[in-house]
Amino acid sequence: MYHLPQLKKTTQINAIAVMTSGGDSPGMNPAIRSVTRAALNQGVRVFGINRGYSGLIIGDIFELKSRNVTNIVQRGGTILKSDRCEAFKDPVVRHQAAEILKEHGIGGLIVIGGDGSLTGAHLLFHETGIPVIGLPGTIDNDIYGTDDTIGFDTALNTALEAIDKIRDTAISHERIFLVEVMGRNSGHIASQVGVACGAEMIIVPEIDFTLETLSFTLANQRAEGRGSSGIIVVAEGPRPGLTYRLARQLEIDGQTAGVCILGHIQRGGQPTGHDRVLASCLGAAAVTYLLAGETDIMVGIKNSKITAIPLLDIMEQKKPLNPELVQLAQLLHK
Image 1 (tube, rainbow, N blue to C red):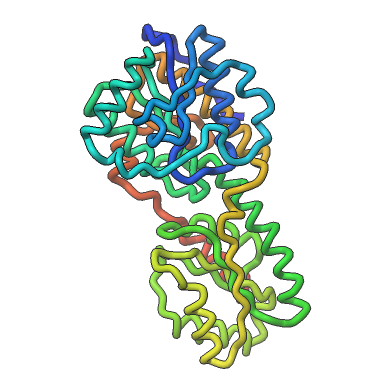
Image 2 (image 1 turned 90 degrees about the horizontal axis):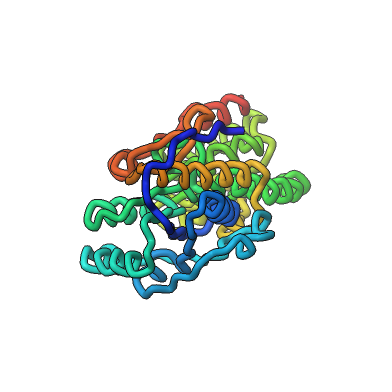
């Protein structure tokens, strides 16, 4: 259990809004529920914004009552829907969005999403003065300043369940399987999934490599009798098709490899208990911070404690990958 912040209400905010933006992640619904009921219990009205910033700029806003968030804690996805809004990159559009919020009497906005969504929240505050709080909602776990993000644990377990099934075939046929997980610019999913499933090798964007070297290393491991799991975990990387390119290189070097792209199944499904608790705590904390006069921050987790991180820090800094996980996977195959 995380310790919730104990702050006094110092603002006269009578209504807040909540939205989910960018890629959906399991646990967004528990976060919506927590924000809604934490605010209602303090006499603050709550509005939901459909489809993130895309819905905001057209005024797709409705009032949330307690009954609206009943029995959603176990549901994947987001009842508020989500979208990626290119138009919101325009300062003129952001000013229009602020006016729409004011027209509804909304005095603060809570945004649940990844770094792009939180950047939009930061710009909205600095250009219009609308108080904003961010929550880290992304399966990639790549947001600076927080040890964990809403949806990461569920995505990790979803990938593990799939890989455990793939492994049955890999062992039965003594074949290599390249399993691609999400992570264009981040290897957090790949590194943790790789260690947890006992992968022979983990390939992540943060560590430079060549296809030829990887193929050679894998061949040597097998020649030495190491690496019997048959599973190679590959983060998708910034260039589409990496996993297929590696499979072709392995074929050139005389090894046959099957390719499994897990894709969007990692985003779906019921959130784990961990993600439900995390989302519930962060949602309630976001309301506390907002009503205490805090703004332009993200509420995250650091060393198992709820903490506030300036949104500007999230924009300017990248969350590093722990290379020890990749090294651990290699060590356990020596």
